[in-house]
Length: 199
Image (cartoon, rainbow, N blue to C red; front, side):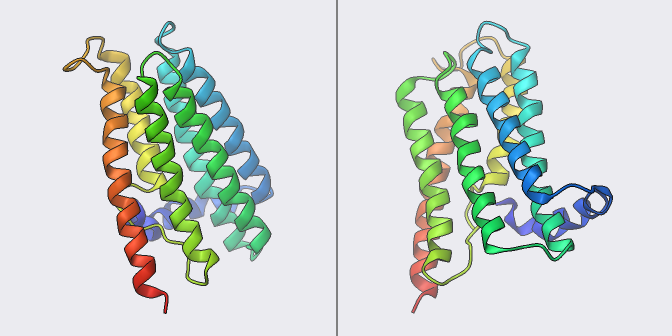
């Protein structure tokens, strides 16, 4: 859903991208490191509640670096197929660490966690598979990666303050249930969009 604001985000990133003298690939791998931190801290956050806040910070840094590396590469004319592959591969690794860390924690029922992670990976797969068969990378749908990053950032902070169950579920479980539903809708959207544009 946030895909429609990509151009505005690019303008926001320009001042940062112009001042940073670091290889885009280094930032890509650095984003993975913060995803790993986010997953670890989320996993232990049930017993150490302030880890929720730290995990939220790590997740938003991951998202920022993920956006920044591509912007730097485009501004310097260093964008390449190799860089694109590394970027998308690291994004998937990051998704597994972030979502997996939360899913394996006591906050989340394991069945809900497994289904959520599977749906999210399928969303991303359809986006890149469209590119693989000759179309462009598809970011369309109501739940892209940028949406997940932003939702998780606020959800972890909210969970820090919400101690009680909501209709038998933790707040983060409700977020994961939303991810499942929204991911299924996004999968359908991307599937039919790809079918429509490929002759």
